[in-house]
Length: 168
Image (cartoon, rainbow, N blue to C red; front, side, top):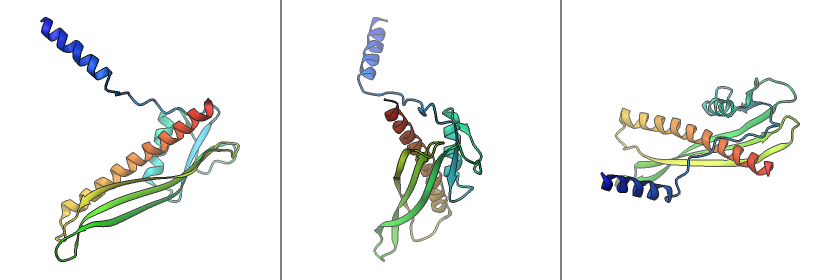
């Protein structure tokens, strides 16, 4: 019994010293007010995920066609690229790097720049043998959805970091 207690105490001590911390919740500026998310594609999955994330963080959603007095998180551009990174003996691409780059900015309801325009880029590698298989196409589709989720989180973290800097 004492050895189990000692092992538990040792485990807790080691875990507390490893540097693991839960990520803080998104901290939005208090004066932000209603926020709309604009993207070139009105039905962009990224824009929908950003709007959901902002709402979960406590921001009031605003209609895309809302007038003045509304903060705007604008997705200026979304770019996808598949770059071959390895080839077989016949010169056919076998492995690709899927890159996703997004340019965004956040403006307050008074048109002030809260987060200056910046680019976030993510990438993942995937295999795509020359003999096409259905599984490889769905692997790429899953990577696209995963990258969109990760991109939304990365952008929201940058918004949170910028607002915590402006609060100090």
